Image 1 (cartoon, chains in turn purple, red):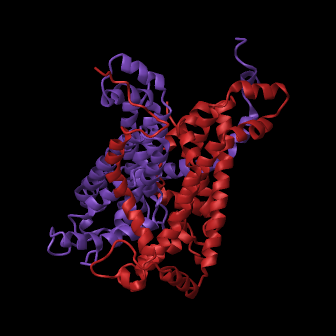
Image 2 (cartoon, rainbow over the protein chains, first blue to last red):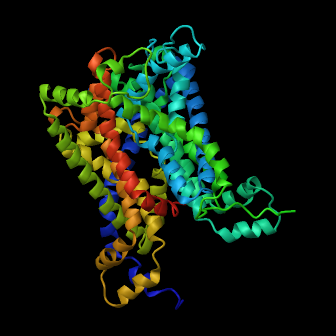
Image 3 (spheres, rainbow over the protein chains, first blue to last red):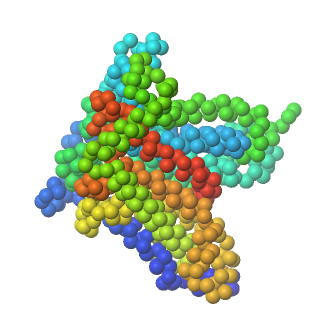
Length: 302
Length: 292
């Protein structure tokens, strides 16, 4: 036990540690842990923000599962479609692009990485106004004008209010902005992987880049892959509010672009049914948690 | 038969083999870049080009009309633009400083100090990486209300300071600092605080830069606090003002579109510049971003 260093002995039960940790922990509890706890608590109540919440048991969840037709018919399918494409899709894209970029020399790599990363930092304002202009519904809208010019369309399409196109556009924008922190983590992970492993693998008979990716790159950077997966999933849901901004209304026309986030806003801040909205929030947190757990199963290095 | 030598990760020089990779990535990169170029062009288009038919992507006679309109509109509304700028700068600086100071302190404790509950706290923070603030906006509102800080700067600042991602990345980075170094300092009689200030902080500059960047990105474009926790216009931020501009004028007002593009550009540029300056640090930090 001599090896257990001074540093360890000195600091076991260290009161100072709590001084260092305290400020962060207090804010963390107040603004992250407590709101989640409140959300879970409120989800079992009826609460209209004016009167005291009254306990209704699992009523909100039962309503959500059995009576909320909008949720079942539009919101859930939309969210699942969106999440399945933008989550794993964005992630696969991040990985492939990072992998490709890692094989370039520093200058082009930096430039391309910057280009790919920049959409994810054009938060909020920039995104909406810009995509709104591009997908504007009359013939002066850019996408319409180009498609008409190219002879693909004869009449302008009202992209943002047409129930057929709103969700695909939201997904497109989700993918566009999915190269966030996760992408950078993967890129850094690949760049820092041990080169001798690759040489050894080549000697052991790895024949091409694809095999190399499967047998070396991915196993050696599982921890980064997991971090990236979690960040990509969270990022995808973070951007979920874009549909309402694009269409300019909540609910979106025909509920075509309605995602869980919009449903929460609809019930919470428009109809003031906070208890119900809280139940929907808990479901959303559950979905994010589910996705992250699946990625953990895939990437946990044990 | 030439044997496969293994692809060269992180090559130092340009080689012919890289061209085909660039050609494969380029179309996607263009797709990513395209809306951003569009915002640049659109912001500088004079009125007749904004609504030209057929629409043109690139600007041919750049002008500053949109920016002038933007400032003029701001002047005629009750609150001067400078007020929004002041609010945003104040809030941004405090959030970035706050989250960096608190995350580095907590990161130091979690990485190098031993105390009860350490692993539970780290696990909790890792779980909170999955936290989607937008999902709990209502409970957050209730919390802020209970604390009585609605309509104060604190409502902008406090909810954003503790960032699980920030702490996570900084803690992982501190893990790389050799224990021997810290031990030596303790033997020389340094206090925990001295070790934190004199050894940890200087060694983890890249992680600090990354944390600052992520905090900045989070607070700079934040609409949630201005929308839900603040009802006094004089305390709202630039991002909020810009968003009212785009939503109120987006549909048909002719001047709106150009102004919206100009506003978007103003909100985007600081993010981009900061990332360009800090990208080396960011990559350095991300290399240690694994969750085990």
